[in-house]
Image 1 (cartoon, rainbow, N blue to C red):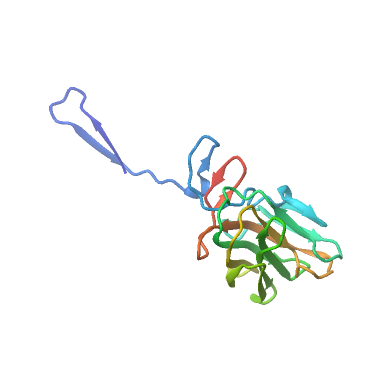
Image 2: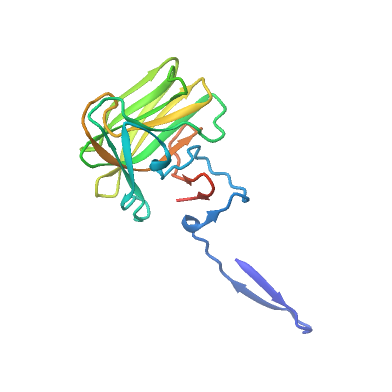
Length: 219
């Protein structure tokens, strides 16, 4: 609420009230603004800006599951195992602790997706594999001293989108997130739709916040 007071030389002030509504989904923050988003993944919706390893990302192919804008990317892989998109420069991720890694995913020709949150040399991490055809967790693994893993998948809407997440406690900094458009070691050619990757230092899955390199937009 904004209150406007106008005296205009009158003995009694004139008070006017207006209500201002800000749609945070459309609020763009410039590089000079201060914001406190918890998502540590730059380019969280632009998988074409991630490192590609045997993958091809085609941007803006279908409507995303949150606001319906055509910003979800198609990530495809060759008929080889261990093909992924990678984001290594996680913002301000300098502490060991409990983290949640998540992404929105929808089947295209492949019906599985894998999330790996790991140390930069992949000597420690947490991994979840998800079935996008029936909305179930296929498996979850910790390695190298990571612990307390929990995985989840939840339907978003009714058109095949899911939010997949993995939670675990790690003892490293300098982390990376890998997303495989398949079971990570399978040799199926094909792809899945991805949108809205997120890593937070928290013990539960938080609401999604988008993060680009130069601006932050809460979705």
